[in-house]
Image 1 (cartoon, rainbow, N blue to C red):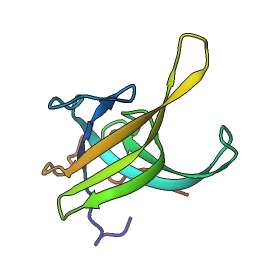
Image 2 (cartoon, one colour; image 1 turned 90 degrees about the vertical axis):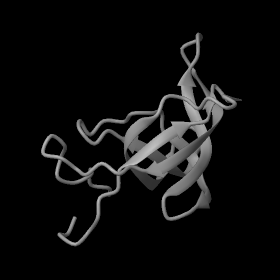
Image 3 (spheres, rainbow, N blue to C red; image 1 turned 135 degrees about the vertical axis):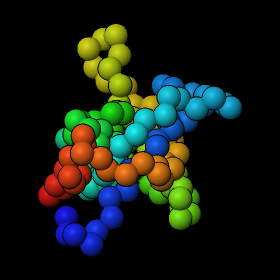
Image 4 (cartoon, rainbow, N blue to C red; image 1 turned 90 degrees about the horizontal axis):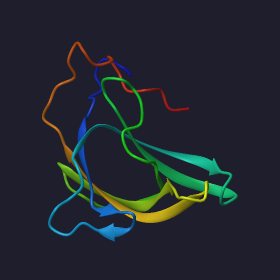
Amino acid sequence: MNKNSHQLLFRVMPMRRRGRPTGQRPGAVKLGWVIITDIQDNEVLRPVRRAQLICATYGVPVLPDLMDAQLVQMTPTLMVLTGWERLPDNNNSTQSYGQTWWCVVADEPVSATRPASPPRVY
């Protein structure tokens, strides 16, 4: 990342639990970098757009990946993404559930306890 780039952290609020809307109470708010990439998905055998929320401190995913991610709304401080999250079920397989993320720009600067830049995306 060059010295003139700006690292945006987001507060992400998942708006569903296992596909069901949470109503007026969004899921727990998580903080991190939103990384959106195109990948080859071996489960559906086609390319998909994947959104990840990566912890700014540890560099690990904070929420289940959002597959087939689509940008629904964007303003200078908010973006809304929709897609599918895959969660394990009781039969040792996965189920896909609809999910919506409200991503609000966080006002926290990147501190010395956090990595200097988000993970590289190839």
